[in-house]
Length: 154
Image (cartoon, rainbow, N blue to C red; front, side, top):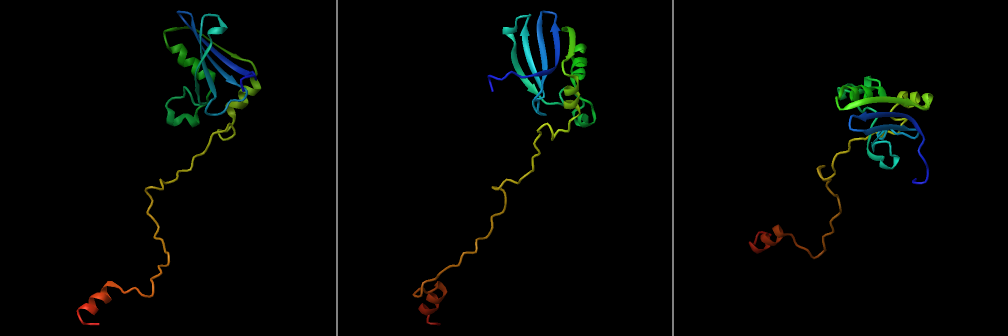
């Protein structure tokens, strides 16, 4: 989908003292695991804007084991950036408020989070006993029968 342009519904811009910008965008088609898009931009030139990484919706929520009870969003990330001394200015711009709030309040499975069922490793599972019928030829004599014939007992 290179030709289609992504619709941005919210953007956080954090400007460092040296002029480098960190831009975090939320797109309209955001999923749970790629909710925030982190970009780096050198100065005001749009041509220097480069994608750094994607982050899930729980980015910035600490402690992580309580993230399901916390409210995610750009304001959480803004507080983290404001606490860092290298950032001179942090601004949040919400372009489509209703869509932004709907994405923040949506359940994770609605946003496309995949539930994983734990399946045991088949290499570690006990091997089933195969119950194939064994055909013994008519002329076959078992070893115990042969020994009993040779010793004169049978």
